[in-house]
Length: 409
Image (cartoon, rainbow, N blue to C red; front, side, top):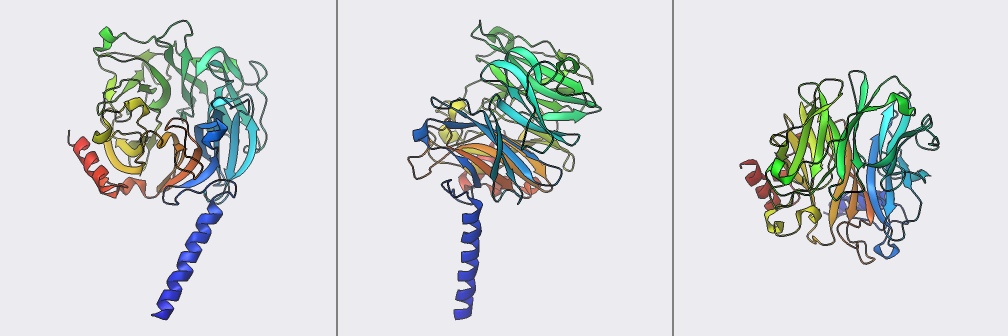
């Protein structure tokens, strides 16, 4: 018995040692079951963490990024980190001071980031030849300023398909309350991505009225690109429709395989999508033949809460056709809906796992997050064997039953 006890003490010591090494010394640790803290900014700083992004480099290492927002955010721009041990530890590589709302794209032995200059402004792309240590400068239309004007995005997917690269972007009309209009951008995969003249984009779609769609809603934005089962590109878009338990997204297919125009029908293209009024990304997994996302599903107990701010439950979902979605597993939950949030997720497939960068509001021993929206952590999370997960694998048994009920509707 003494030997058995000693063995368990050794094992526990090793586990705690690994967990402590996984957190940077200046970052308050999280429960390892939640994930690993890449970066932290206490609520007292009034600098909140936004726009999480992640990518896998050709050598198997990871890069992650975020920006700051809030009253004291300053002009630090996008902060970029690297992990050479599958996410266990992270080191800051660089920053891009003139870039925000940005996501990664690995293409032809280079790392790219696409976003906007700050707020609603010029659409930019940056390139790194050394995997995130140094970056080009967006000076003009030949070096990374893709479009002038008021553009908006986040860490949304960029997809290469049949010789073209696609991305969803929102145009912001400053002179109207209904201000966002989605557009599909594309470029020849062999062209210079920093040259604005090589990029084509569809005419931004004007927002339909409530009479056209048949219900009350307020906006659509953070358009993400997907390749439809037909082989045509298109967009899946966050929809600000605030009825608890009945959230929606917008799904718009292009008219052809080159994405020259969008074929939008307001009576057909609003779909039921749990968590649809918060930002989400959708990726297609060839091994399962399914589309996957990580979404802020709202449990029944929170239906009276503003669904746009209900971000304390993160659920893995999948679909065969992009229109009908199945909830698979609740991977994160925080009981304090006012101060816990796991949102704005960017993710990648890594073999049988998903790796995710998550804008996280959670307890930190320093007063916690300012709100569920104003995050104090950038969280890295690995979801192992994601294709096999089912509702019964959820972090709470009662959430498993919620997912089963939703799937049976």
